[in-house]
Length: 90
Image 1 (cartoon, rainbow, N blue to C red):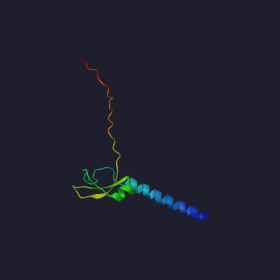
Image 2: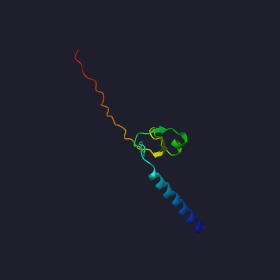
Image 3: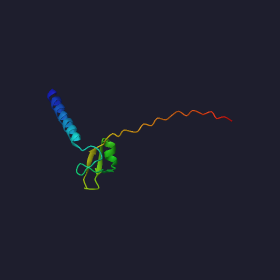
Image 4: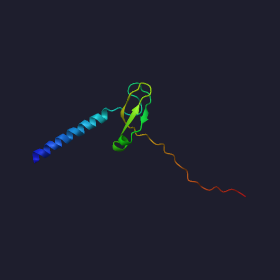
C-alpha cells in the first residue's frame, strides 16, 4: 500500500511541476508575442469559469491567437471627499 501512495504522490508532483512550467511559459498580458501590438480578447465562458487566470486572445495584425496569462490591472482608487454642508449667508 505504501508503494502505491509513493507512486501516486510522484505522479501528482510531476503533473504539478509540468502545469507550473507551462503556465510560466505562456505569454503575459494583452500584447502580441510576435508583433507587440494589443490583441483582442476572445470571450470563452468555459475557460473563464474553469481557469480564470488564463484568457484567449487574438492579434488583428498578424493573426496570432492563443492562450495568455491575465494581468492584474491596478484599479484607480479615487478618494471621495466627505460632503460637508457649507454655510451660506442669507
